[in-house]
Length: 331
Image (tube, one colour):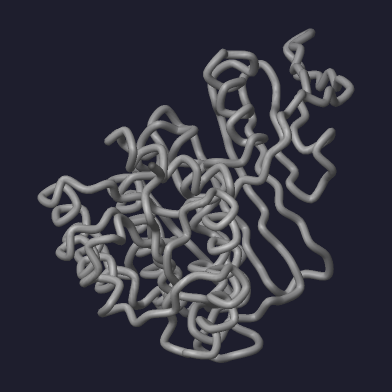
């Protein structure tokens, strides 16, 4: 019998999670601080509409999927773990590293499945890209960059870094296989004075490897792209393209003749990617982990690593720019 899951949070993304849980046959209840939002979803899927307190007190509920506002993720997750529930929580798992570590500790103490919703880790194109990198087809990674750009949806409670970058940071840390040695970020706030609309986060890793994440909701068109530069080629995951062109390999080479580097460009080759909705795959993975007692691909420890990078990037954004005189800036 599949786990019975209650959805906590019936906003825009919560509705998507609810749909997938219903399709997977395990949506048992919904709850939201706005009763009308929960009622719509409960009526749509003919399920129970109950309070969070009732969800946590209900022994028939095996697990919860948390899609409440990010600032509440840690506290709601802790309450669910203490109530003996398995937990899926949307990114970020917390807004402070100390809170994330507390959640991680509580999950391990409770012996319950805990999973963070880093959606793109479950995208079939990224999974194939990761397999290609592991196979050595492009050689050792030298550099990774991602662009997550669009016009809107402009948030009022979190900046573009926290809204857009967690997925890309998660993918980059997985590809690099370690936490960064240093993190720096720059950005600008143009719509609201306290929230950055545009940010670029730079990371350095061992062996001279580097990565950057460029995010913005003030961009003229939508772009969702991850590019991996290796010593023997390059891979591009472009989620704005149709499935047949989402993942491409470029077998570019640099040839040295007469002590001069010459770029030898190759045609892009599309790589086969299986069909499948990432969110459905993500929720199916969570249910599978609950049933089998296995560790999720994006567990609490992975969520903590991503949060550490986000916090370091935010700290850099919060630091005031040094004053540079006109005579110094070109030196």
